[in-house]
Amino acid sequence: MVLEQYLVAYLAKDSVLTSWHGDKLGTYRILSTWRTPRSSVSDTMSSVECFVNGVRYVGRSAGVGMVICAKRSPRQ
Image (cartoon, rainbow, N blue to C red; front, top):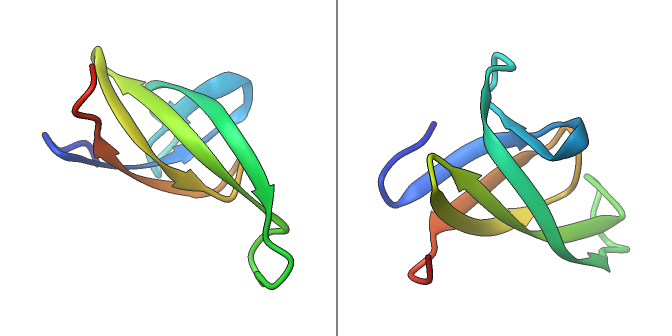
């Protein structure tokens, strides 16, 4: 789901950002990763930068195959 101010998508292999159905929406880049030892979902969390139709979104995700909820970045 891509809205003007928000993005909900999935991280696929090779920096591809996809919809639930696997359709390519854009690309992403991992900015940083840290350990989350108390999480039952993943042992790491990452800060992610996404690009869809030239618009930059930033958010967090637990990694490839997982969802990302991101906000449109004020810095394009």
